[in-house]
Image (cartoon, rainbow, N blue to C red; front, side, top):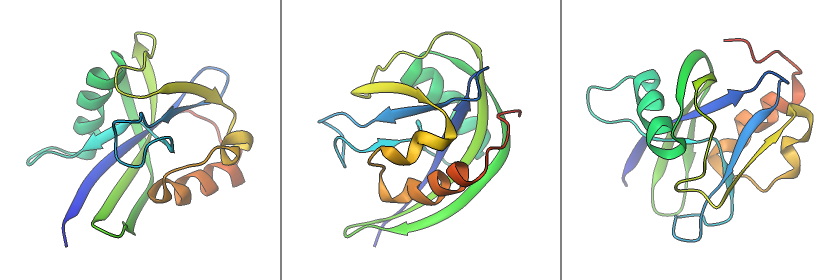
Amino acid sequence: MKTLHVAGAVIFNDRNEILCAQRSPSMPLPGLWEFPGGKIEPGETPESCLVREIREELDCLIEVGERIADITHQYPDFTVRLITLKARILEGTPRPKEHAQLVWLPPSEIEKLEWAPADMPTVRSLARSSGTGRT
């Protein structure tokens, strides 16, 4: 079974809200929410992957901070290893180029969305802790 290695950016704004991205109808797991990011290419670190992916997906430059989680999730047809890291925007305003929509929510409210299963351990961790978004 194929394993995908991906990185997800938990992007905080100045109000300690987290950027949540809804998968578009043309993506696998359509309509579910995720942390923006993507596949880690050969030779790439999770950090450099996120800088590249966020530039491509949201037209923003980010600074990547500490690792939040390293999760392996088994879907019916493939396995995902998802590494989530805190990040903040240095330049640009997020625009959904690939996602259906983007919303900013405080950590205490992110569990209200219907998340992709691989993202759930990070969602639960963030909802439990009211930690700062400092990177």
